[in-house]
Image (tube, rainbow, N blue to C red; front, side):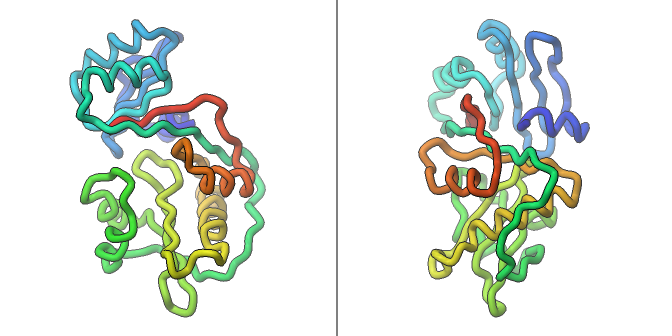
Length: 215
């Protein structure tokens, strides 16, 4: 889905698209996304574009190859979660959820650090793609859409944890996606059992095979 959805939205620049593989650039995120049937083809395609800042790889061999060539980069192994149902998620509605503006930039930058560049949160705020949950006027946490279209960016501030706000914010975003004709999907870092269990509880399907972000 991480490659299918951008293609469906017609937001990619194809480099290669045949039965044995697909390789394209996603201009919004500046990510190069690839899935091929053979390592040889994947290696050839990756080599053809030179060194890039961000990759989404669907074959472990190709991810290993890039890391061998570019050992200075970081890698995040993930599974993918997709909400395949049409009916909304049933979750509590104790928070007031609204789109966040740039006035929250400093606070959100303090709370979010997942390997993104310094301007990432700013760009997401400018795109009106971050939603905040408020209780009694206090911002308790936030959630939103990544530049590649996936859901995520979930953070519940420490003093508000234990109240189910993470599940509520995630459920709200899934329902917001359905209402906006967007596919609710995202990636979960392998080993993050809390996030994995949350996505399962909300009814998302989890991929059997991993995928790999390299940045």
